[in-house]
Length: 315
Image (cartoon, rainbow, N blue to C red):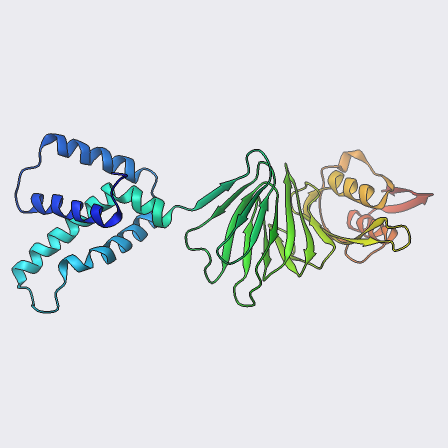
């Protein structure tokens, strides 16, 4: 089978089913082979794939049953309808795998031992880092350019004002019109680093974040958490400093909120351990470390005591 081209498969299938609908006997061996082909072909196909396969097959078979010179009788139409139905069924079972792999099955790229550079049809370039996997549908590029990513990769997206490029990763997505950015996924910790252009990062349960160049989106490895960090290089020393621009939590345990605040503000926060699992929803965008800790205390109904760089949340 794998040595036949598509048209030869169509012709073979049509003739075989024409024999059956015309009343010719099909041997037990042929029936057994057809049953095996059908089972193997259909096991990997879902309802959407089946529908698309049938549409493509109908289009390919149209020339067998149409004529511009004669109008077939009702009897011939009935016969042709049986032949079409039979050809479709067998084409789907016999040629289903061919159709699926050629026209439907997504292309999957894997960087097994090191970096791998993928050139997409729209001109975008994806650099997969070691262990990463990129899935691209056969319909790419469409009105919306969509790919799926496992692991880490750097994207240089071809610009288009009308065709957004969306990368679906593990629990979040990144939408752009044309830019250069990096997606990192290490366990529960997710991040998007933007080098050029603009991107919008979406994650379940938290607001959409819009990044500018030299900014990072991250969830700090905590579900329903989102932050935007800005990086600035000091012209004199060349060292890079970071600033937390926004920070949002949606129904996140207090102990994890505290850990993020301590880590980003280089401070220590003491609080009653009996409420460490209390769920917190808060937006700390735009505040200083003191203002944000005051906001947290207000949510908890606590007072705040400060000594040096240490804060105490007290009932």
